[in-house]
Image 1 (spheres, helix red, strand yellow):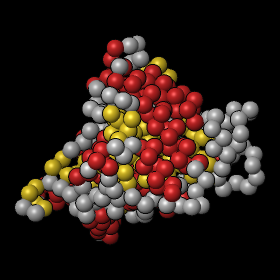
Image 2: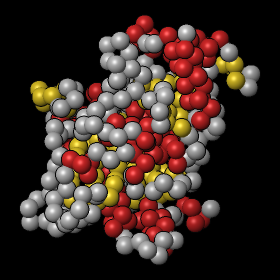
Image 3: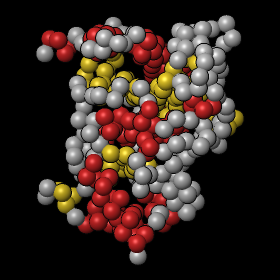
Image 4: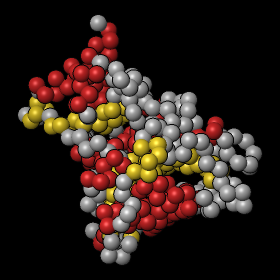
Length: 337
């Protein structure tokens, strides 16, 4: 117990590095810089109601969402924290239309960083949990010059590390390097992330479904049938419960811990849903799969899809393996009729 209590994020990263003699320490340095950015953003989120940082900037990002001031703060904080270490050749943010090149005077590295600086930001004013999502790849283009769009459009299974930071009643940093998922909670007393969720394993089946049911009449028949099935049946003697926060980080975090399924399907108005493949779906799929779960677009594994553009949207069904397999069966059966 004592070891767990004093297992800080830096110590956990360094101990993990020792298990891989070939490690250069670069990924460790990247994670530590990300955790620093998380602390800065967390501070600003916590005092957002007290300063003139809430509200819209009056602009829209590439995805068509109105940009909140706190989104811009998080975006710029991540850039400042990550653009000078010499680890990256290119970056991309959900808040930026194009890829982001490193400052010309900085060393070019071998890694690629993709991030959603503030997921769920429409909930900021209501003090609902929001978060940062990040994804790290190795560059695929040859040479040691600046990275390109090709480096950013890799299938999700090639991720080296993925993670998210949840800014809620406490700030939680969750990450995986593909083997094991670990969560750290920020102790505000001395400003350090402490191990709070060791080797997270998602239950094989849960009894919580998470989806915006306001879109019910726009859904395909298979999904409607699936929801009716959940509402009419019980699992281990108990009915399914509906839980939907509207912030992917918060909804997936709960699903990861308790089991069940989070869905953002396509519908008649948004055929491909509204979530972005490279900034949201790929990193979350990498995390959930590393915890023993499943993530698909209803037919195909999310991590096998090759992105066609930086801001491509995709339907997603993610969570406990048995729950995701069941919704896939309902979707397939409906298509077969």
